[in-house]
Length: 112
Image (cartoon, rainbow, N blue to C red):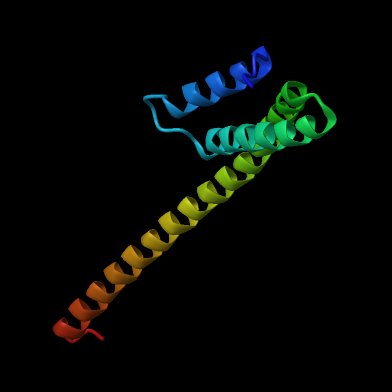
């Protein structure tokens, strides 16, 4: 049996385009793509059970796309926060090292 539903074809085409992009995908984009594919697959299965696999796949794909984008956006925010925290840790370590060197210099001169 061949599926001729244009909605399913559109979802597959959109997913292939996302995967084939030359620039790296953001976490949000990855989440949206994974959500769309997972939603389309789940929707297709549920749709098959009720006799409308194409409609189920289309609806599931759209819902999965939105959900995946929201989750990806949250993950992307967490990644940004982690990068900022790591940058602050590196600054603090550099300052500690500078202060250690200064203390050693003062000890060497006998001023401490």
